[in-house]
Image (tube, rainbow, N blue to C red; front, side, top):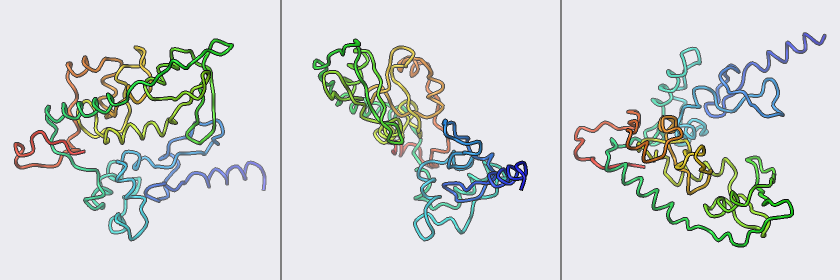
Length: 275
């Protein structure tokens, strides 16, 4: 077999990939490209285009084996030709009620303020750590070390002010007077903040799955447990580099209606925010 024919066969084999969640064979164009240095020309990420927009509960139900709580054999996901939106709605209809995204009561201003007070109380419990033991090394810097999401160790040298901020805001601990260690990898830190805030947007009270900085990084904020909260994608983009109070006073976007459950008597559920 000649080299062009061999490359053609390899290309045809790589045009289809199984989704990690719905377990369906779909075209390679339905998957996001991997951007790492070791990624090949046909390397793609696990979830397909339809499953990327699902909530974590729906993903878990979609990937569950036959016979468990999420049994999707009765109503399989539609083909890619029907569109990503059709596939998502078909999947939601086939899931049992307990496996779908939790439905929330309509969020009121009182409920939003109560959730913000709860998060602020959790942040206030993170007492600043003592940084008096830190000393500069011969290069006039502090050594910061940590691990990547894949478990690989890394290290770099940072300024003393940054090291003191990371330690004070509980993002790192002091190993010795010249070294601090970061407590979380990027993936671990994201999961920590989302679970701490119960996947609830700090600003609008809707479903949130992104991380936002209370003090924007453009104004000197850092990625630490004290400065980061859960936010929905819309609030995260609209807030941009504005302060929290400025963003709230200017008007917070309303949560998506898909997060609400229908209620015949809205007064009976006023002030309720289910997380």
